[in-house]
Length: 236
Image 1 (cartoon, rainbow, N blue to C red):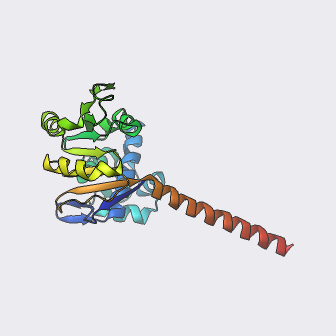
Image 2: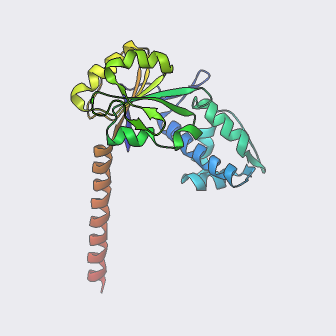
Image 3: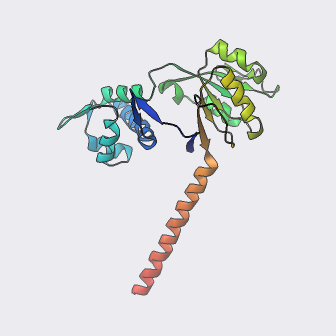
C-alpha cells in the first residue's frame, strides 16, 4: 500500500535530529526483522545480517541507524534487544497509542480485528459507523458506536490516534470532527486529499496508486523480457 503524507512535513525526529522519510520507512522494516530475531532467540546481529534480513545493503542500514546514535560495536554487531528498543523509542512506539477506527465496513472491521497492532504498541479502543444497522454490533471485543457520538467516545476511550475508513464524500467532515475532538494523528484510507492544520499529521494509504506503480514495473519487466528474447533470436 502506498502511504503518503498530507501535507508534506518532517517525517520524524530523534531529539532535534530529523529522520528522512525513506530512512523512517526502513526503520520500521528493521524493527520487524529484529522482532523476528528476538522470537528466534538471537541476541546479537551484524550489520550485514540485519541488512540482508531487511532487504537493503549494509551502508544504507548503517546510515539509517546513525540517525539514532551509535549502537553497534565493530566486530561484535548489534544487541538485538537494545537496538529494537532504541528504534521503538525513535518511532514513538513506547507511548500508549489508543486508536479509534471511523468506518465499520469490511476494511474497518478487518483493521479492528487485526491482532498485530497490540504487539506494535497500538490498542484499538473504538470502532464507529454511521449505519444504524451496524451500530451496536460486536466486532471482536469492540461494540460499534454511532459516529454521531464520536466526540464523547473519543473522550471516554482516551483515543489519541484515528483511522478513517470512510467514503471520500464524508472524509473531510469526519476529519474536522476528529481534529476538533483533539486527534492530531490520522491514518486515512479515504480516496481524497484532506485539508488539515499544520499541527495535524495525516497519512494517506492509497492502494490504487500502489497497484498502478506495480503495473508499471510489471509492464517494464515484460518489455525487457520481450527485448531479451528478440536479441537472443537475432544472435542465433
